[in-house]
Image (tube, rainbow, N blue to C red; front, side, top):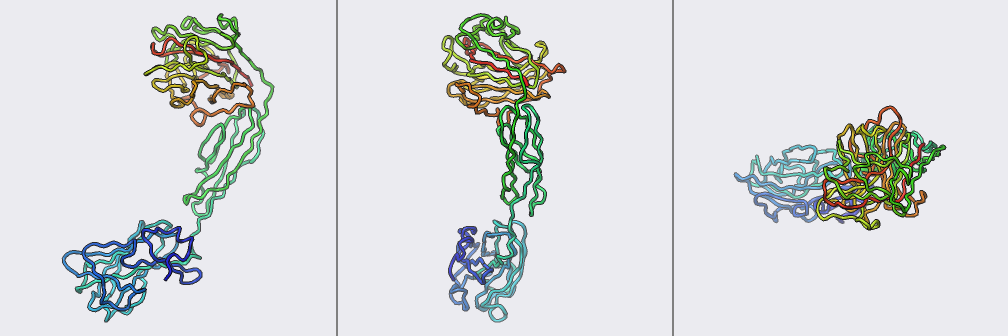
Length: 495
């Protein structure tokens, strides 16, 4: 009998446990395992049945002597597809053999025992296949048939072959799920909240809408609904779902066109003068005494941290240092370009401290009342032993939550930072390696943390509809001091 006659089944079956695959008709297939084949194992002593007659495909099988020790012979296979299987055994001719031999079927999902006559003089099925049982198994399920000497009423027990037969035409075919979304095209204004829904039905699993996966450049999520705030650029939302058999639906694509309604823009450049920022840029200074050496130098915001005694520059929990910002109404978008910490007088070089240090510069959003300690920020610098990283933080009533983007994600210690706030006061954060052209068409923003969400609970902004947006530079303790916090351009767009 030729082995592995159907190529597609050859791929599906485990070579470690199957040695023979034959075709009975155009639709029927079987898995035949002989003694000695891969997938067989035994306990106790089993001997070649050289005196037996009526072999199966030339194989006379094995036998074991019954004693106080239980001996077993096991045939095992992995089912190639979800289907109904007929389980058969073959008994070669020999006498005397037991007339009550225990055959146990075991699988991942069930088990059953049968007692058969093996004596050549009285077994009506000697020299031919006999049906042991009929069962349904799943694709990939491991099934074994074990012949045991336990309970035998004669001296000898035999084992020859086991066969699993199934009809390919009745295979339980797994169909991919069907996914439908509430729309495939949508036009919105910048700052609008987009709400989508989807339904997913699978022939085998039923309603799997709760498993729909959504992703876009702005946010990823799982569930039957998806919500995201439109930013300034057109983008595409994609959705798909996977059933329990691993099959995916077609991917749905929702094209989002974003209109940009009239907005006001505040733009801040930094000239080659070291004067207070309120005079050179129009930014308002908050708590300026905590960090007096802040100005601009040849197109860069420059804040020099020389003294951090008493952690006076620190922004963490209830502590807040200096903020140079402007009061804006939300929704808005703020972008700070080419941001990083630098050694003093070396504005283009990254500042890296041996050991642990907390040195940062970046974008900050604060309650419109500077004395009300609710704020969020996205900053560049060193966080402990994590160098050239980006830290995200939210502080609600003086309690901070923070994390970072990972060690050395900014090889040169520089990034562009972007914070957006929608009409409800919800913040999303983005970053990228510096776009030195500063042309928005060349921006490639990466959502912070994969979904743009900063850690912790959204701060309480009050009822004014306004916040302070600006730049902070700060340190924790004296490690890494002195250093510069530098940035090239701040732009705030109010929607």
